[in-house]
Picture (spheres, protein in one colour):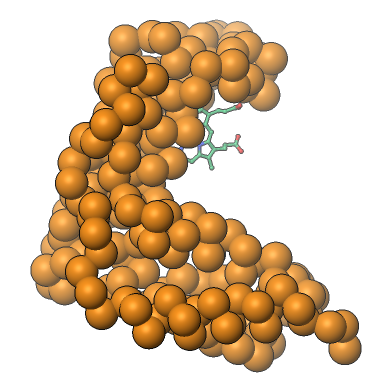
Length: 189
Ligand code: HEC
């Protein structure tokens, strides 16, 4: 059995955070925040970014200590790599997923990121920026719908996300052989 310093540290942190988690999340869902000059936008507070992006990603690593091919045997549900049954699970996991998607949109605006085709991500293109906005809006729609705790609304949430992904993929990811195939990813259609 390997030492699990990371996991134990995380569990301690989770307890501390949970103790202060009853207050409303400050800065939550305030829409387009500052940082307009760089195009970056703030949708989640730090707590939400931690829960929505960093906590799920790190739990994958911590769980992998027990063998990533046997994830169903992972012992501790609180740090489950499945956000829906982790410490911040169920409806809160859906809220966090919305924040994660909206914040992840910021990562699609940073100049200099390359596509697998060797072409730069076209962050300066107007339609790319529109698709990024679509992902932000879909993420925040998920967040707001999750707050209603109405399971029927999750169909709308999923539709919004799928549309936001597909709108951009149709133009910049899906490349038929006639369009030159994957080497033309990140070129407009
Ligand atoms: C603003 C444009 C844009 C948006 C929005 C977007 N994607 Fe993508 N996505 C791309 C591009 C371009 C690629 C190809 C990247 C490459 O090959 O380097 C890609 C690739 C991917 C891949 C990898 C495909 C492969 O070849 O293995 C996955 C998975 C993916 N996207 C999922 C999503 C999901 C899920 C969403 C919505 C929640 C989403 N993307 C939203 C542009 C976008």
